[in-house]
Image (cartoon, rainbow, N blue to C red; front, top):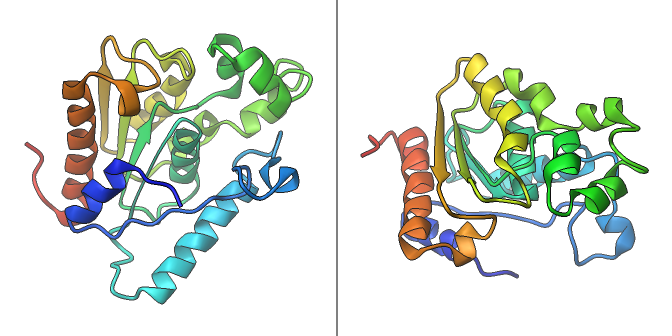
Length: 217
């Protein structure tokens, strides 16, 4: 199990919070954690099956009012999910990946991390890298999208999220961007207290608006 303070906050706000470790994550050996070059496939399937299972065993959850959020690779998955299903009523994408080729070129660890995902480099396999980039599917998004990012994020620079943000706008769905000036990839854990509180308020208000029908302040 893992502790995230935001999950405790949302539970206190009346939300049923659930999460899992899909394929591609740690804790179950190398074979389980290796999804190089097929990002958005096995991990996406695991998350959808887990969501189905949770909704089946907890019938008190309203299936029409379920939200999704995640940061970093979880932001990639949030973007990917929004581009591949309309089952979620709201999404909050945080410090996310939207284009693997931009991630390779602009991320502080992109040269070696993304090369492992799409060896020897996404530039040599651009077709597959774009096939597995959320930006390709952004105009399919039907879910209201909140984007949380920091302008000094070197791990997932703002530029690589923009294809998803722009595509969502072109798709005509409700979109909101909250950009934190002077913050970086560690906003949620080590950002200025006022910025960390603002981040939580933005996500909570977005979910309240689309899951509870409450007006944002």
